[in-house]
Image (tube, rainbow, N blue to C red):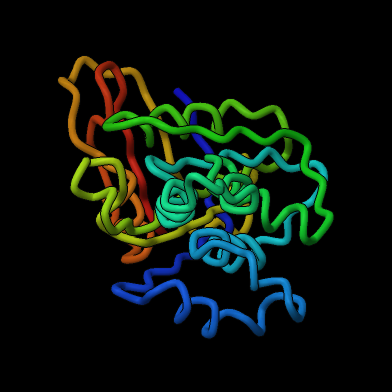
Amino acid sequence: MLAAYIHAVATDDPGAEEPAGTRERLKDRFPRGATRRMTQLGLLMGAVLDPLRLTEMDTVVYASEFAESRALEGFLDSFPSASPTLFQTSIHPSAVQQWLIQRQQAVRTFFPMTGGPHLVAQALQVALLADTPRSIFCGGDERGTWLLEAGAASMRTFAFALALSRDPLGAMGEIKLAPSDHASGDLSLQRFFDALQGRESLALSPTAGLWLTLDWR
């Protein structure tokens, strides 16, 4: 069984807020002028990671199914004069990298992960197997526009981050992954986000062969 205690959680659920609205809402959390080229998801990830006070000894696991949908749309729309800036911000790890680079923040290990129905289970396994004193499991997606028609973008914008360690002192919750003979269940990244935001307990099979429990204190 893999297990860790939850010591901090941060979430941001902007609803139908457009990127310009997110930029205006969060601009005071970043250095002056830094938000001009940041993506909406980059702003949200910075906002949820900042309270966790990352250190160079942390492992960071980042899960996103579609990542920077708006930046990718903008990059594709920029052809035939392709925008190098939009290309740079449209790559999958961009949301976390924007914040790390801006702060010149070093971390021990960074695992950007993508996937479909089993993304949460796969990313959590990496976070719970980390050999550092603390691991940061973070994730999110950015609502697309025309890419939605091709099923290549998220229908919702959201971001979360939680700090995990094996120290029970002061923990606000616990998360476990155990072997199971249950059939694969359904635990999307959005569903996991909702549980974190609502401090909702979970007990389900996120993928074949595993049983996940999330409990709060």
